[in-house]
Image (cartoon, rainbow, N blue to C red):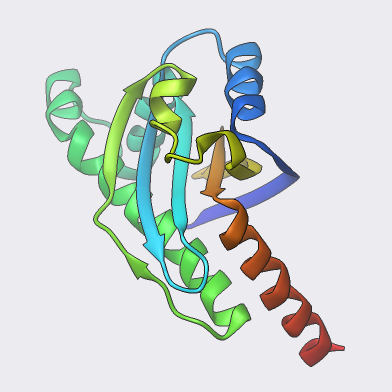
Length: 171
């Protein structure tokens, strides 16, 4: 299946602001697929969906399945979806910046916004989040979610330098 991805809004905000935005926008539980990355820039990328929409996403990709089979496949399917989406996003960023990242295996998390973003690093008060609203269109079905890229201040500074290099090369 072809998956179309649209990013209508991008923000750079503090970690606590993302938690508050998610709490305001999403009343129910969330599911997140988290993948850590390291290199010149390090952090974690998290694909986030309302829990009920994550089932729709799996149905759109896997086709009609009995509920018991869907529940059995759920952890593996969400991990694989996250691995593909996050891996491709991080690879695209690395290619643009002419750098490489080492990626961890994806992890799935369910719960509230703070659970999904995970515990802050020791400098958690200074973590910044590149927060993207993401719309997926699969087989005519539109599913909205979020992509959060959490970094610390030194990594954010490195990212700004790499982006400036990219702009000068492209200019």
